[in-house]
Image (cartoon, rainbow, N blue to C red; front, top):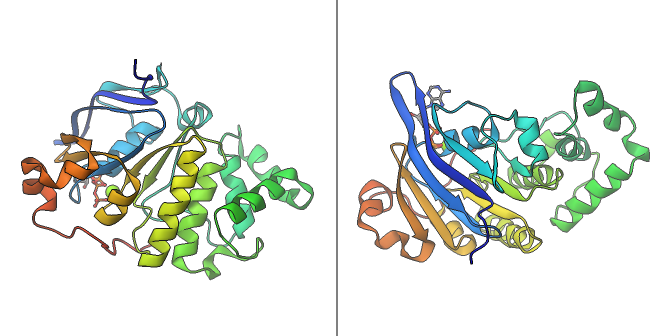
Length: 263
Ligand SMILES: Nc1ncnc2c1ncn2[C@@H]1O[C@H](COP(=O)(O)OP(=O)(O)OP(=O)(O)O)[C@@H](O)[C@H]1O
Ligand SMILES: [Mg+2]
């Protein structure tokens, strides 16, 4: 019998005014999988991430994490339940150091600002600092932990954001366009790193326009178009699907897209 999916969306619906941006979307993310969520600009991919992570309430349907309904929970409790995400446009704090940014990820579960800041004030003595340094090294990020984030190249900052998202020890990691703006070498490094993350037991759900990255990393793909799910299957077959070709892959950028570098 297949394992229970780590994440289930059931008839998820979201409207902004008169615009339906998620229209009865249902799919499962299998435990341990590396799944892509793709679709044209404006299809509703980031909105779905926002619904899963608790930025917006749903207008209909439900979201389940490991069999537990989470759509009514505040974001912090969803992180506590094992979900973590990165953002499409980098949300590191540019004037904090590398280590401070990474440690903030560990404290996404903290109960208030006081909890959040205390470890930063005491960081030099803390075991969290050591753990954060180890995570950075494991990710192949060889920068000084006290370097200010704003001084670092874009590709490095993108990777640090993934490391930060991992600090809460998620079982499901959702990444919104992690390869956007990376050069081919950085993209290959990121893919290898994410395979290691997945091999360590973290399920991945990745929004991405760079189809060579998607093919390299993700065995399964779901496709959204105008808020509707139009494909759920193997990544290797996605480009053969008539509806997907019509909506997305047949007529547009398919690989190595630069994406939005705005930070
Ligand atoms: N807070 C909001 N209020 C109103 N409309 C919104 C809001 N957030 C998103 N939208 C609209 O919802 C639709 C889906 O946007 P979304 O950002 O989810 O698309 P996307 O698939 O992530 O696109 P991209 O590939 O460009 O990142 C768009 O029409 C967008 O303008
Ligand atoms: Mg988006």
